[in-house]
Length: 430
Image (cartoon, rainbow, N blue to C red; front, top):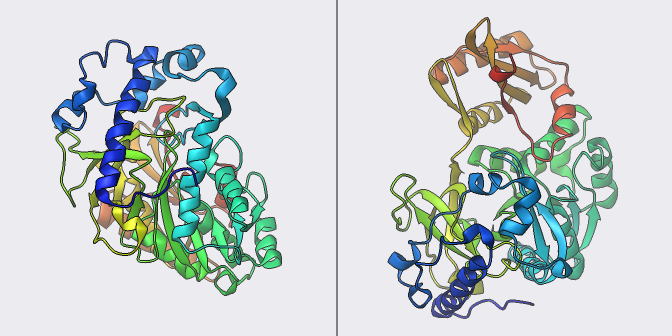
């Protein structure tokens, strides 16, 4: 194990103090930070007033660096130390690519190992890994870590690599106890299983490990119901690594704050917030920063945090974090803000809907909401369509134009994506 768990919160604070100084020292080596950190007193970083003098780092600032100069401007490791490159999620814009050193990978592997430990996975388990494999790091990091832990793993990858029909066959053939993947793809597999008459809830899968997409209560309930399995959500970001995971009590995600120093701040004032207050998550990487010195990184996640009760559980030294949403994720139609997550929860909560897509379009010069819906087998489509129209109108004060593509059309479209995206603003295309 590369980084032993802190024995106490006092030990955790001491480690953070040491690594925060190193994080600033790393950042000062990057041309990107030239002149931005000269006023920071390295001997006073535990004073939050001094720490907050460090400017927030936002993705738009990194995107502003010309592509051919990104590595020389922001990255600090020589080529001889680079192990691989990780792709950012790209959920809020153009993805970026970050080099990871061999030392970074060793620490990241420990973070992924912890997630298996926290859900109670071991050598008796078989994991079916449906996370994307390749430059998006989650899939191959979990697969490699599973092998190190003697957990049998099927490197299926997402539907872009192994078609979903084959994945369902493999679930029956390999009889895994754990399914791993993005929540949206888990729901896609459940929808496909329903059309094929496969009882996914009766499969051998007992645990589901999700990440990389927001997991609302509605989406969690639907995953657990359709798979007949317990869902464990985890949180990470390419800029750092896997950062935390739910334990069996599901009280929140245990955040590994020995790997990353976190702050929760007010979105507008940037003032620090206390326990159970929702605000913007700010992250400073403490160990996976040997190539990319992410310092006070504004992640775009809205979270709250609190300290759990200290118990015999060694992970109780860490804070618990709950996600609210991302700052992105809505469009305005006819003056009405339509939050993507709220709309998705409304549609997923319906028993008659198999899949859907929501688009803001330009209809003769006016804003319109186009909703494509595939209904489950046995549903009277016209009645269900009318019910959805009324529900959308009463909830969002916008009447949608509903189309009903052939069953499986939307699933085939989503299968080509790294992350399932059901929302599109098409108005600039017309």
